[in-house]
Length: 265
Image (cartoon, rainbow, N blue to C red):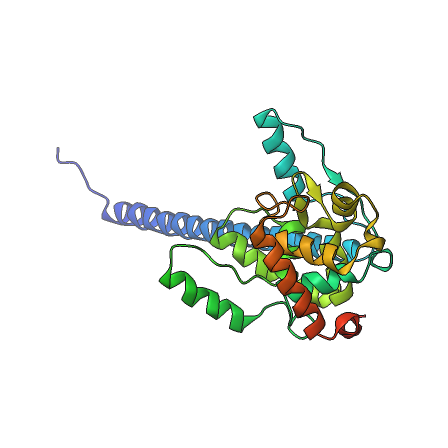
């Protein structure tokens, strides 16, 4: 006897199956979209908290002394690895207790447009780019603000990521700290010799007195060594450092002496 085929039942089952497949596929797509949205929402929230933490630290360091920096940590680790003395010589000293010869000499040597720019000297940066394209020796054009941002918040190695972060922190400290605070921090955290940071400890180690007693020549000599305080010696200056010291003293006078600092007070 021939088997009877129920076409209506087959059609319904196929139709039901196709509807189920569509519902399942739609559900899978919704879950996928939800997972992507969840990921980006979480990522955005994470980045917001990271940004908020940097703002908190920047505001805090406007009022709290900077006793230790990544640069100090790096030098200490290197010394330990090499089996050398690893003690960090640093002593926070308020701006008011530092001889004004120091900030004047450093600005005359490193960043004469410091009172005027907003963290970046674009003319000097473009000049450095042109110089670096011609020669083998790399020349930098970092302002005092950029150096503080790098020393306090970042690492020393050259990379596009670090430079990008340096731009961010430079803009933030210019906005939040102001010129006087930036200069005060620089005077306390700048590397001034082997395992030595800040002008106070440099004065005590190399001149045998406090930074408040520094003469014009002493301040200019320290500033002359700042491009490479490990290579250049404050205690036993070379002829090159002596020439730089004399030139910085002329620049200090040309800026108008200590009256130049009124622009940032």
